[in-house]
Length: 523
Ligand code: NOJ
Image (cartoon, rainbow, N blue to C red; front, side, top):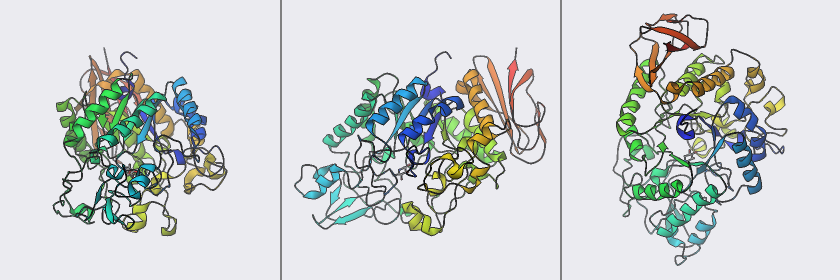
């Protein structure tokens, strides 16, 4: 493939390490487990793997509270295992992206332990300490300030109290954080996903946030002083210089409260390569309502197309991740996969880098937990209004053997009971499965440049159908999706169209219920 740039033209697959594959029978996934599944990922046809955190952690936020940025938690393996993972991935042409959680550390991180040891400690100013709290709220509930009796001051934490926010205004902190990037790039890492990066800098005077309408304390504030401060830009410039001193490195930011406008403002040749805009997954944390119909979907697409195109920024597409109910659970009914086919088709044919969440290729559903089984802190706090994020983090369903081939010991979260029928091995053997559809679509993306880099042109259709063209250098591909349970016609633009991929039995221009057709203009 000419001019194939891995992070722009490729497909990124997110692995939540503790739930992917357990090699040593302790019920927790690990790096050796991931290595044992690299052939599966290469065969599926993805290009890069984003690893959610595997660093040492007391698990107050399941890995997003890190006590050492440059180590591997022994439960997941060792630095030697990590080096082997990078080498084995690269041998198969797969890139590795790490999750850097630099807005906050764990309260067990040596930096914070030193900082809290005395008001005179040289690292005191590495975190945000004040005599009196302002009105800021933690996004997982409660106040954003915790009193530390040993030194008589409060420290700031935008998430759990065990995740103190780092003081990015301190130049020594910034240097130490850049050293973290350097450490992993020297080990061969290809890119980074930056956790809530636009919260790194807070307003220097820490003023109260103004009020707004909302359900939880956190939502009842306008977050103008705790996120999106202008100092973010010079830091991104500095970070990009460092990344560009190594070949083909990449950074994608998790924009906290992203709008497309805000998202593009952080991207560019001297800033991030990309940032998530979560067009299809936006959810109010307390009342999770997810719209899903062609009218709504096309509105989201146009919104982001307009903003990203105008700014010349390459978008990303996300349907699922470790913070959200899975797309199959949001849109699907029972075990029926028709909505998962539609979501996968959109994910892999829209303009932008697709991110597949592990298990999405087999339509994994969220597990349902009783209150006593909930592990996730916001779930514990807000149950039953909001049940937290454990549901989408259950073990990967590899086959129909006990515990789904994930582990030989009781896993850290239960396996979904549907694993007997819904698993990789079964779907690999079924030509009509979501797995095989995904695999074919991934191969098609590789083969057809317009599906990767082509312009997006929406087509007029009947209600219930979504259709668009992707066009590049004279190549024209048409994607049509029937969101409804009635057979629908759509008008093929003039010319001779050849079917590239079809999810059901229809003929060109006639979509049976929930059918997807991808056609190419010939001649
Ligand atoms: C965003 C991550 O995606 C989420 O899982 C985590 O809990 C918070 N940031 C805090 O790190």
